[in-house]
Amino acid sequence: MPKRKIVEIDDRKCNGCGLCVPACAEGAIQIIGGKARLVSDIYCDGLGACLGECPQGAITIIEREAADFDETAAHRHVAQLRQARQISGPQPGTCPGTRVAAFQLELVSPPTPVSHGSADAKGLSVAGGPTPTSALGHWPIQLHLVPPSAPFLRGADLLLAADCVAFALADFHERYLRGRPLVIACPKLDHTQPYVEKLAAMFTQASLSSLTVIHMEVPCCMGLVRIAQAARQAAGVETPLHEVVISTRGVVLRESVVAV
Picture 1 (cartoon, rainbow, N blue to C red):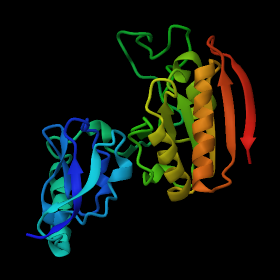
Picture 2 (cartoon, helix red, strand yellow; picture 1 turned 30 degrees about the vertical axis):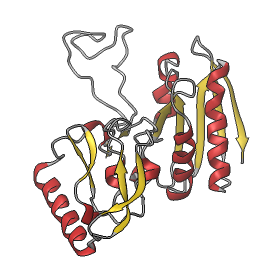
Picture 3 (cartoon, rainbow, N blue to C red; picture 1 turned 180 degrees about the horizontal axis):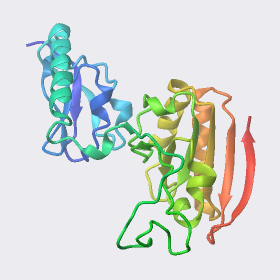
Picture 4 (cartoon, rainbow, N blue to C red; picture 1 turned 120 degrees about the horizontal axis):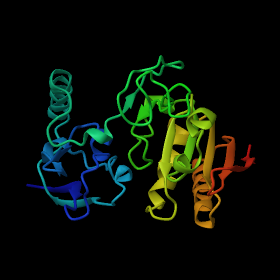
């Protein structure tokens, strides 16, 4: 059997996020037992389209003895996978939290009777007003998990929010989120280099109309703006970039244009 280039997945690094699965047009990678697996050598063309989608760096291209890539078999395999998904929904072992979905939002929602929590039986909040409705229009929202090819990103005014913002800013949904797709990230606690690459891909693949970065006033949170700037530069685009700074007490301190 001849040697050729082929994908290798490090089981120790893989966390089963599933981002590599849609990146492989040949269907060579599937989530099995909570880990990404190469299901057959003949489905892998060895070109490595999946490498850039792995936030853990678990996928590499190696050279080893392997059966030749069979393009016809790969196309047949992909068609079977699509048919299986249409019939039965998500396949066993995949993470439902990574499935891309867009929601149909109601701008005005009628009061919903409830019997517990922060609203009374008439659907009113404890303050006496209508129960607030979510302005989130899609899933997932974590930057690691949102593919640049997601349909809700195309030509969008994307909102990149630090994880803490929605907890600090009381009117986040109505003031900033409604009508915009959202990705969230933490520049202090997350591994951020993949964020630069992911945002750069969003700039180019989705042709974003603008990017607004909304973050907390604490110094470490400024890293989110630097990530956005680096991604914009890497993509070679002139997409308008805006910044919103929120205080730890939930006050909007500044709204500014970073780049146009």
